Length: 186
Image (cartoon, rainbow, N blue to C red):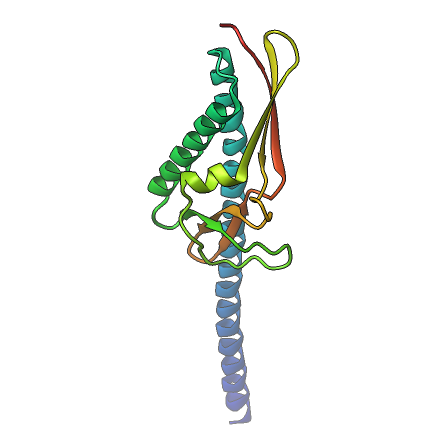
């Protein structure tokens, strides 16, 4: 009788450990899924950064090659391309992962909330994007495109990258600049 009772207690403990082990395994798998989502959201953020850099550089080079070196015209073209890019990304990523661009008007270097601001409009980009064209030679130009944050340096373009369990913020920092050397052939 005592041995039977010991066997029952042993089996009960074994089943309890097995149940605990299964629950631990489930939690571990959930942790791995979240880690993969974090990695995936970081990948999207890096891709956005690279794509924006490339878009600015490509647009500058294409326009300067055609002979367009007037600052306001060049800035307008870059802003149009950025708006088209934002729209295409938002159209492509409407579900999880969801990517949406917005403008924050009251940036604080200490607090950036993960909630959307207003939709980015071209007039907003016209206010926060500055462009300077330097003539290095008769046909060689250095173009610097800067995201200034506006007059008070408090405006910025953000993208919210949302996956099922993870949300990450991409933003173009105030005073970010991209310098491009371009050759005018016209």
